[in-house]
Length: 556
Image 1 (cartoon, rainbow, N blue to C red):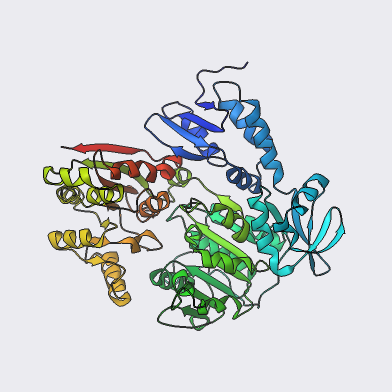
Image 2 (tube, one colour):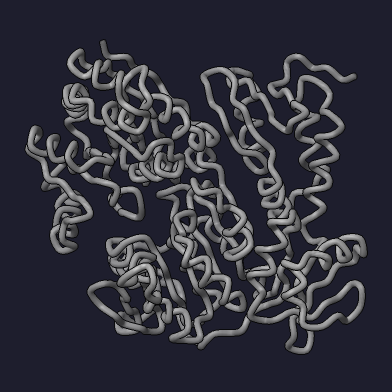
């Protein structure tokens, strides 16, 4: 038995990994582990990672072999890696690509060289219905319109499909990245943006063209998408989270691409334009008058022969959009996100219908290179006031969380933090509108919520950007796609239970590179010894995986 007690990892037979945070090899091993495992617990000294089928399949699609993974585990493990773990890794990695979808003579076929697998899956009635014709034991003709559904059904049986069915070319539209922005600044594509776009496109072959690019907030996912558009040069549909993001996409396209403004359309609650480049929101596409009515705006997917569909913040994709994605598998699909984490557990749907992870860059690598700000994360714990203790004690779990989240003692902590950062631009972010309104009144600063008119919202964002206001309160609208490059402090006063993706997005609001020392500060004010503190630990899991450490301050 090989034993190296100085190594940082203990590999357990249930495929969890215990990793010593204070080990001198921790930083080295952390970025390697994030390619095929995810953090599920992150107390101060020992982090627990989990190896799952979906984490292994994403590793396989990004080029990792089972030998690569086992070599990492054996190199950094204190003790021998359990044989069942080695076998499970080998089996799951090898499952990817065992079943393929290919195109021959304008028809789609499901194929495998493994007779046992084909016999197994053809026995499932849930799979059999997708077959149009049996060619032989290893090859079945499938319904073109069921391409997405069959992939989804097979991954739920433990078989991720490698889709080499290719794409129908969309309407041609000439476009390219500019050499200079509208302000005359040189437009330079960073190495990782170029690499991500090339891996996604794969020279136009069926091996590329669908999948997810994972980059930190502030690292230039939009420019990466533009580099892909430059390669494909076809009419493009861009879907994003809200109207603010729609306008930002439009500004970025005008600023950085050779596209006429008249060829860029906005499809929103306010404007319904279908143009060669059309930008819309998930909200308008999933809008309907009642639960029994049709999603009338879903027709946008068929209004043009799109050559590319871009799903911004793909981890937030609503269920109806997944269903639409299942029907358009012959169109190239690019997902953009800072994290593949989904709180609803639908990672397999993203893998099957948008595509597997194509590119991933650890946050701390980009921080070290200066492409995103160096962030310090602090959890400030404040005691619950005496007059709320009894109400808290007798409340149910959900009410306990809200009472703790709206703890009025947080306002004094907030004032102290603002005083500490009086020369910085500060975002105050929260979940509960009533709480945020109280803070806005107390501090005499503006607030943006979901009810704020878009025109007023844009005015406040512009004032914040140019420095007319230096403190801005925002509700959940701040979770996604708001470009406030000079914000260097974010103070979170409440959040959505244990949402890891929300935590990552909120930190992301302040990660754009800064002039000077390139530093950012992220504070989370929580009520000590409460349900809120318990959920805060879960919220921090993804950022812990990326190497962020939370400092703890206890306010008596």
